[in-house]
Image (cartoon, rainbow, N blue to C red):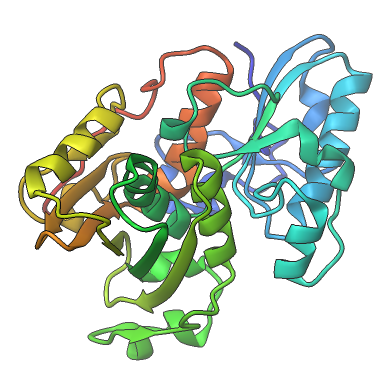
Length: 325
């Protein structure tokens, strides 16, 4: 399948990808970045196009709208996976309430589905908005639990993320002297991803769910560790709880239910999510770990694109975590 991204072969005067991302010098030798208004020039009319957008929140919608207009003019068959927050809400007003700005392409909202791949067997829209990294880790932990009806539909989520969750731009929260050997909560009970988690859990589970979310910055670069707590409606055993998750993810190649508590090093740099559970009979704890840059972003986006094009879901995503990092 011919595919396009916002990087491609171009003239020698454009910036090589390797100058910005040195670790890709061998894998993408000779590949250059191209401008936003010229990348489509290299794609023939009538092509099949896989378009990934990783533009910032609030900017991605306009970029995608322009790309889809070009696609219609050039008679492309196109699927888009957007990693920003611009297509994570079905309603324009819901997005604008959270982000405090006008949506860049409200007419396109109905063309996007937002969910993690594990919670949708199929989608009826041509495009997907991939949930955020905190949301991905949380949804994989909460949805089977809420759907089972074994707990109340209120969850308390404590998540810890590495410094790469804030991107490459220098800021106080990612500055080494501030982040190294340090850990702290930020925006407790007020983080803008909490409504996203609640809405997507409700949509996937069928139960109206409340999410109480406290995010933390951790002293590591990559990964997210989420702990979800809920109150059981009646006494539950750990085996019952584990069976809920094994059944929910029996056909999910990237989710593994582990016997012990999950560890970040076992998933970092892979597209895996490891889930562990615990209960004292009345309270339930579910722990979820992912790599924020892979399963929580680029890997999850590729997983969705594989499905949109009816490719094997695991295509390009089978690399194991290195373990010793």
